[in-house]
Amino acid sequence: MKRRLIQRKEDLPDAFNLKKYETANNFNIAEWAINLEMRVLCKHQLSSSHHESKLYGIKLVNDLLQNPIFETGPIPSGTGLKKVVFPSQINDLDVNSYFCAAINFKEARYKKYADAVHKNMETSEQLTEIEEEIVWSPVWKMYQDIGIDGENNRYVVIDLHGSEEKIIDDVRQWLREARLQAGLHLPQKKFSKKDFAEWTNKGILPFLDLENWATAAEVQISHNLLGLTLFPHEYEVELTGRIRKGTIPLARSITHEGFTDALRSQALAEFADSQAATMGRN
Image 1 (tube, helix red, strand yellow):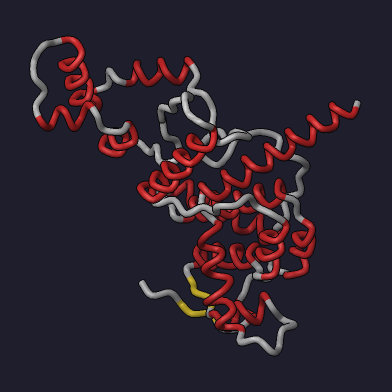
Image 2: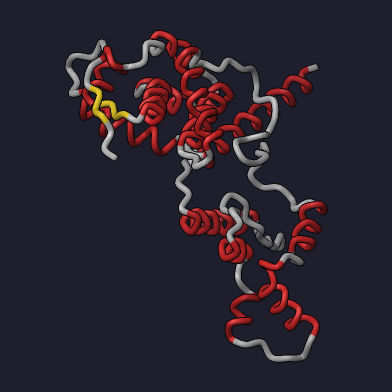
C-alpha cells in the first residue's frame, strides 16, 4: 500500500525538536554505540510480524522523540542486540561452546552431517561424492543449510607455525572472503572522531528517529522536508540531494547489528585499555 507523502513541517510529530540532539556533537564511542543500537532495535521491532513487538517499537519511537539522547558512561557490558560482544574479535573456543556443539549434533537437523562424519570415522565404507562434500564443508555452510544464523561467528583452525606476517596476511585474506560470503559490509579501519563528526553533520540520529516515526505512522516524509528539517540553516546547499546522496546511504550503512556490535567491541577494548593504563600509573 502506498504511503501518504508528508511535505509540511506541521505534519511532523510535535515531540521532534532538533535542539534535543545537540549533545550528540560531543558523543564518545560508547554513546554512539548505545544510541545507534536503540535505533536499530526500534527498526527491528517495527518490522516484526509479532503484534507485541510492533507495539514495543511504536513505544520506543515515541520515547526516542521525547528523549533522543541516551547518556551513558563507559560501555558496561558486552551484551549487544542479539549476542555477547567481546573487546577482541578473536577469542579461543571455550570448552563449554565446544561441548555444546557436540550435544547439538544429536538434533535431527544435523542428521545427514552426523551420519556422514560417523561413516567417515567409524566405518571402512567409502564415502559418496555428496558425503565427501558434507564432511569437508566449512561449519558455516552447515549452519546456513540447517537455518542457523551464524553469520557473525566463524570457527577456524590457525596453524601457529608460521611467521607473524604470513599468518596476519592469511587472516586478512580469509576475513575478506568470509565477509563477502556473509554479505557483511563493515569498515576496514577503527572508528574515529572523524566518523562521529560525519554522523553528526549528516543528521543521522534525528533522521533515524523521523524515519522510524514515519514507519510507525505508515507515512513517507519527502526528501525536501527532511532536508529543511535536519539542516534548517543551510541555504546554499541543494537539500534534497544532500538527504538522498548523503544522509540516507550513510544511515543505511551504519544501522545494522554488525555495525553496532563493531562499535560496542571497540568501545569495550578502549575502556579496557584505559583501565589498564590507569592501573599501571597507580
